[in-house]
Length: 83
Image 1 (cartoon, rainbow, N blue to C red):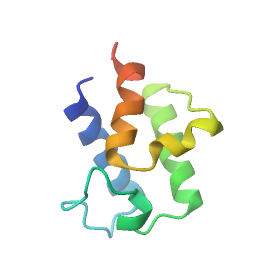
Image 2: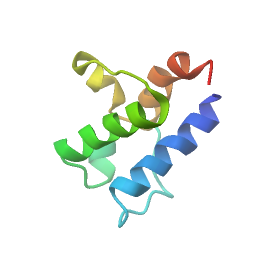
Image 3: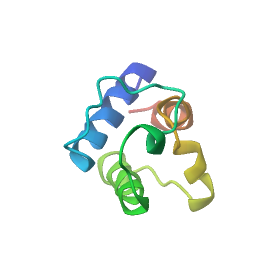
């Protein structure tokens, strides 16, 4: 997947987890938690949805790399290259 496709996928997951949030102005470099209402359970839902949709295993020690759109895309890009 390209970075743009990964970004669209993340936005789709976020829209399911936080359906009342406006994701149109999401800043790539700013933390998701600073921009939208996400608690720790919502974050785990994101990780679980990535596992379900793409069979990507994300170790707990890597969760910090999923803090913003830019870091999430950067982390996922090599893992989703063959998809």
